[in-house]
Image (cartoon, rainbow, N blue to C red; front, top):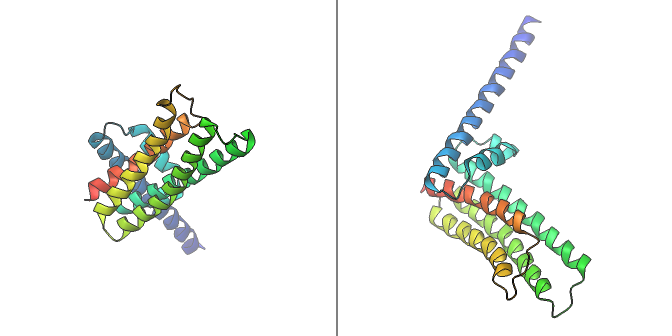
Length: 182
């Protein structure tokens, strides 16, 4: 019986050490990334990664980068669904500027999902140059989605402003991590 109790205690100690290591990896990586890229918000980086199981179990910066790419890709997929829902609910006409802008964003979010999967694969095979390039393109596309609304004459109000800000931060995280791996 004493052996069983000791075994359970050892198991919990191991789990605590493992979690503490992942936590310090997240915090240290986010601090370095935020110091390198002023657009990346440190508090967002830490909270975002601590909120996802894959990030919490990461053992290295490379694993943290791929986990954060997966998180950003999943967020893009959710935004694609949200934009599709808006298009269906509002039933914009063929000549609707707002409808056209939303359709563009749907395609951007759809492409981002695929692009970020490609970036994660590139990190896994240590092709950091490709990973940086494709992650940067996902970031630029997300910013472009928002800019298209603002630069219209007359300017349009984007239904995705807050979502795009969050997605931008979520893409900045793996981009900064991948640059650190390079």
